[in-house]
Amino acid sequence: MHTVDLVKRNFVALNLDYKQMGLGGDNSWGARTHPQYTLPAKAYSYTFRIRPLGRFDDAEKLSKQVFNLR
Image (cartoon, rainbow, N blue to C red; front, top):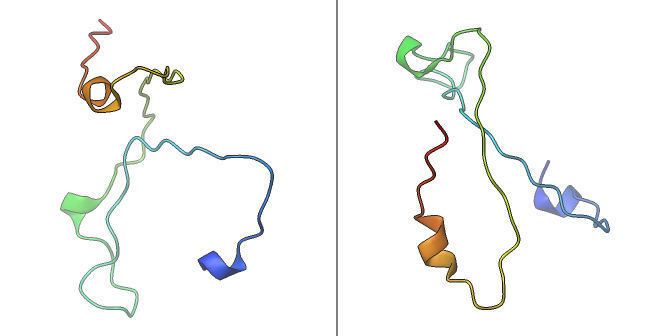
């Protein structure tokens, strides 16, 4: 869709994608994606942490924080 086609709604949608496969090959006539840019068909998983920012939180500092989940 184009942005002019979107309907304004009273909610926020957040999509978090782990990986994304590459676009088509070398032309606009249906060429396949190059193998090095494809994702094999298998189960994928990932984790993430989300929390609201406080009034005095430093968003830039928090964006660079690394969490060790293991």
